[in-house]
Each structure stands twice: as C-alpha cells, then as structure tokens.
Amino acid sequence: GAGVSQSPSNKVTEKGKDVELRCDPISGHTALYWYRQSLGQGLEFLIYFQGNSAPDKSGLPSDRFSAERTGGSVSTLTIQRTQQEDSAVYLCASSLVLLARDTQYFGPGTRLTVL
Amino acid sequence: DAKTTQPPSMDCAEGRAANLPCNHSTISGNEYVYWYRQIHSQGPQYIIHGLKNNETNEMASLIITEDRKSSTLILPHATLRDTAVYYCIVGYGQNFVFGPGTRLSVLP
Image (cartoon, rainbow over all chains, first blue to last red; front, top):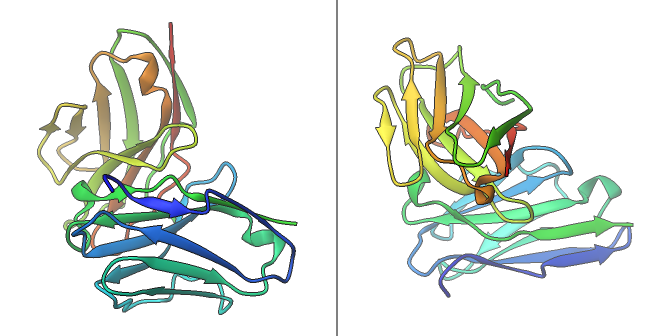
C-alpha cells in the first residue's frame, strides 16, 4: 500500500482480555515504531524495530505489553490482561532507515477502549 | 519528559503567517529540532527539522536562534487545513519525546 496501515481501527475490549494490534509499514521501510497517545496527551514512545529486532524494550509500559515483527514487515503489538489505563490510540510509524525522522510516516492508529 | 515548552493554543487568520514558538533551553549539541503536526484523527505528519541553521521546505520554515534555546515554525500563508496540533521535539537517536504541542486554529 501507499502508506502505513493499522488494524483494527477501533477495538473495544473487556478488562482482563488480551488484544493484538497490527501494523503494516510502508514497503521497503526497515524501521518500525510504536507509540501510544492517551486522550489529550502527546505521544509516548513504546518500542522500535530495526528489521525484526527490537534492541530496547524499556519503553513498554509493563510486562503485559509485547511486540514482534516478522519478515521485516508486519508488526503486532500485544497487550495481555488489558487494564482500563491501557485505553489510548496506538500509533505505528515506519521510516526508510532507522531514526530517519524526515521519512517517518505514521499510520492512522488503533483506538483501544478497555471497559 | 519532553524537553520543549510550547503554548497550548494559538489562533491565526487564514492567509496570514502562523508563527509557532518553542523553547528548548536544555538542548544539547547533537540534538535536532523537529516539528510534526497532527490533524484531528490522523497520525502525526513530519514537517521540518534542523540543527542550527534555518531551514525551509515546501511546507514551512524553521528559524532557530543562535543559542539554539528556542525556535519558531513559520507557516507563511496559513489555510484552514493547517488547523492541527503542532509538536516541537528535541531529540537525537532514540530520544524522541512528543509533548502536548500547540493547538493551532486557523480562522476564516
């Protein structure tokens, strides 16, 4: 596709359930990033991938959060045992090479609501 | 925590220049100044970045003070479609923190 796509666009889940969020980066982009944006707040950086590798997972909010990337393309962000404070818009971005911010394009986000 | 300070909101008349200020008094020598904007319900969009020289592209101009402690993003002829939240970010490498930004409203 022409841009970064994310699915689902909206997800409503019950507290305690697991959710999986998907990101399809721009073809050929080697770097992929996940951010979280709570209502009315700025973006919180979560994790980045260079290829399939995520060298620094310290930005993930808790051990309930995990992310993987396969084939240097699609990435999934998994939240286990969701809590109400996990409600936010989860944004994915990709860039041609790692940390090339001028080629960093964001997807539309997944709005997660935990009831 | 974000290393920048921006006014929470600004208004600008359509067709006029919008000048968005940003303070980054603790910027270090290898950190760039980046500007993004986020139009309602969309992901952020890269606008421009610079290290110490002023920069211009098709979207905007970036003016960085000589001491690099502040900068101004200039949209030369604001349109209604420029209404968005504008983020000023100071960072290098992985260190890249979005603050709450400035909500710019372009008024007809």
